[in-house]
Every structure is written in C-alpha cells, then in structure tokens.
Length: 210
Length: 210
DNA sequence: TCCTTATTGTGACCTTCGTCACTTATCGGG
DNA sequence: CCCGATAAGTGACGAAGGTCACAATAAGGA
Image (cartoon, rainbow over all chains, first blue to last red; front, top):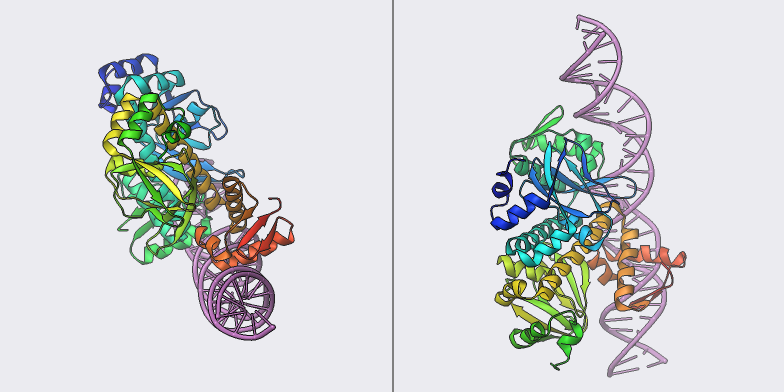
C-alpha cells in the first residue's frame, strides 16, 4: 500500500492512529465478485475499505441474498465491528463489486483505540449511526411499500453510489437482490420504461429520471 | 427519584458517572400509552429507561405504526442518540406501555462523557450494537417470511419481554403493529389455535407453545 | 453468416393478503 | 337480566406478486 492511502481515506484520524493502523492493520485484496465475508463466519477483525466498492447482503437459510447497502472507500463494515466485539457469527454477506482493497484491524486494537483515540471512537460511532439509518429506511421500504417503489429505490441507490445512469445489472440479478422474481422485475421495469423513467438495454438499465 | 436507582439500573457505570447522571439528567414520567417521542420531533437529549416499559415504532406518512422493538429498564434509545448527535428529526415513535420513568441526558453531556467515561462509551456502543441486531432480524422477517411467521415472531417477542404467556392485545392492535389488517390476523390466529400453538381469549392471546 | 446461449417478454394461473360487508360472541353497566 | 358496545369470526372478492411454460430477441463465437 502506498503510505499516503490511510491519511487520504481517513483524514479525521489522528496522526498516531494513522500510524498504528499502518502498523497493525493487515492489507487484503479482493477481486470483483469475491466475498469479503460469508454468513456464519466468525471475525477477529474489522475491515476498513481503502478503495473499490462492496455490497452488503442479508442472507436467509435458503440462500436468498437481500441487498442492504453499499460500503465505499473510507467506510467500515459496522457488522464486522458488532461480530468481532461480541464473538458472534456474521449475519451478513459482503461481496466486492469492483476490485477492492481493505485493511483489517484486529479486535484487540479496535478496543484499545476506542479509549485511546477520539478519532477512532468517533469513527466507530458514526459508522453505527449511518448504517442504523440505512437499515431503518430499508425497513420502511419493505414494510410499507410495494415492489414497484422498492425497485425504484433500489435503482436510485445504485445510481447515486455508482455515479452513473447506467446500472450494469440484468433482471435476474436485480430480482435476487430485492428478493423478488425475474418476471416481476421485468414487468415492473417495462412499465417504468413506458412512463419514461428508464430505458432498458441488454444487461443494463439506463435511468432517465426517477 | 431514589438515589439508589441509577447504580441499580446501571451498575457498569463508574461512580462519578452515576453521580453526574444524577446531577445533570432530568427525570421524567410517562403514563401508560403516553408517547415519549414522536416522529418528526427534534431531540436535545437521549433517554435512559429507569423503569417501566417502552415500545419503539417506525411510522410511515399515512400514520401506520410498525413495531420494531421493546426498550427495557437499563436500556437507552439508540435512535435518540443518533438524532440528538446529528441534529436530525426523529424517525421513530416511542410509546410507554407501562407507567415509565426515564432520565434525559442532554446532548452536551452525552458527548463529553464519551471521552471521559469508559463505562459510558461502552454503553453507547452496546446500545447501538444490540439495536442493530434487532433491526437485522426484523428485516429478515419482513423480507423473507410471510405474515404467519411474522406473527409468531411478534408473539414470541412479547412473550419474552413481558415474561408471561398471556399477551394482552386484541387483534386490531396486533394488526396495526405488524402492518396488516385485523381480519388477516384473526384468520392466522385461528389457524394457530387449531394447531395448538395458542389459545384465544377476548383481548388477550395465550401462548401454548410456539 | 449461422448457431448456440443468455437475456428478456408474456400469458395463464395460483397464493397471499387486504378490503368490504356482515354476523356472532362477549363483556360491563344500568 | 337486558342492551349497547367492543371484539372476533367469516365469506366474497380483488390486487399484487410468485411460478410455469414458452416465445422472442440480441450477442458472440465458429
């Protein structure tokens, strides 16, 4: 890793904290579509994203993957913090959607730094907070809205995160991630196209205006 | 408040922290069915539950109330922490289900204590953690399961929290809290009764075995 | 260019759940 | 003990969304 990455991605951290991360953290690489963590796995460390992009899913027993949110560079996986701290199994699955570089912080340092560095405890709290809100809004959508609205919400999130109007996913993949079926997604997308909200391409959806 | 309440409910806090809570916190009482916080409200403080029992709901624009979890004595509202810290509107609603006594901690102390008392920062983190998991399991149920399983889950949570096999709710109330309709809940309960899982009474449901 | 394969489009049909319109208990007061 | 009010039960019907079976399109390699 270039020495400049940590200060760049985590500018709010104290110099000494950045130094410690550099020393104690373990860099790892994941290629596109590789899983960073699997449901049922135990953790001894938390992960900070240095670059790339990660998707977080909730899985059920039948292997259905429900997409919850994106993790971007400069962010950490709140769940890995929970699990590491409480010695619990992972309840989620994380998958790289671009080639991704992370730095793994062992549990013992996570805890030590909580008292030692204000920047760290701040970061941990903020991480919990933002994911908390993310989950609440997810609950909203699946509790109160129909598939049509959820699909729009899903597309919007991708548009924002990817920073592009072309979402490079096919109908089957979308269906899996919102826990529906391909046919239903096809039908809804078609309807959205008729309303001029999107334009459908093979293996991609172009967002016109949501 | 009796001087002994704080140490009793929050034994993990440092003596000085307990002292500060005593001095800076403001005690408030809520009667059964009173709202502790409303959707859209701003906070300047977080709330620790001293005794009683509180239910946390997510509301949508049409006033539907979706039950998320219970708050018990010794616990705090994670959401009030989020909102107070970020000067955001409350995204949830909290209602006392028994006469309830809380102590409100102003934002400025919340932040000060984070650095000052290990017991406090520990408590805040733990609060986020446990609610995080609660939300995850909620998402599971509404994303992957049907009404029948969700209803069982709902009843189980009440059984555990109330510590009794008699759930003192009518069908309409349950329907509201799981975002369904009375008729559907009636039908499902009836079916559960036929399977020997519950016994139905007027204004109450007796749990036999789930 | 043609052929194979992956993707998308569609109609028929079923289940779950919400809604409407009642009927049938059950409880508590007068 | 009767009455009105609340709670609960029920049948009919419709909408949303899942499933099945195929048809219709691209797209890419031989």
